[in-house]
Amino acid sequence: MSKRELDNLVEIGSLKKESPSRYEYDGMIKSARRGLADAQTPTIETDSQFDLAYEAAHKFALAALRREGYRSKNRITVFQTLVHTLATDKADLQILLKAHNERNLAAYEGRVDIDRKLLADLVGATKRLQSAVGRLSPPK
Image 1 (cartoon, rainbow, N blue to C red):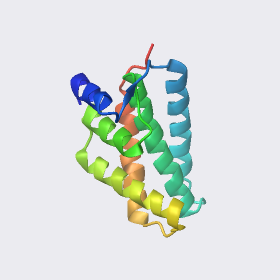
Image 2: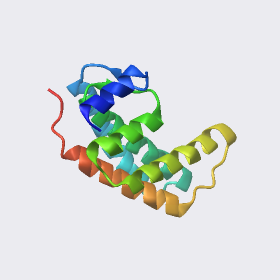
Image 3: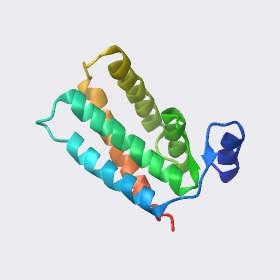
Image 4: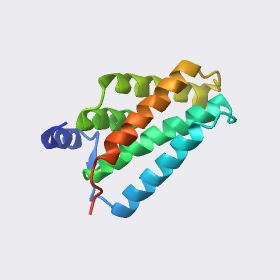
């Protein structure tokens, strides 16, 4: 997304402008990396791996958005904005949106049957987000 498109999201209340914080950015990246690594630990239950991968994806996405000087409380907006801003694979957005729906089913309806293919897809998408965010220079 262009700066203008991001500012349009500010105008309609989907994002808010907030000065980037290097400390916050570094903390999100560190936490996301650790979560992604833990999500790939085969001795952890599948639902916990899913939670870790999902949270890692969200933290990478949020870090990239914060780097640009924006904040959102809505995870869907964070994912959509990141994927468009970094020009990552649009299929990753679909994976993140599906993971978001599954996360909500688990959190609000107690569903814990995680599809292993979705977990593998989520880990792959999160790795691609990590790579894309890793190519960015941190905020000053």
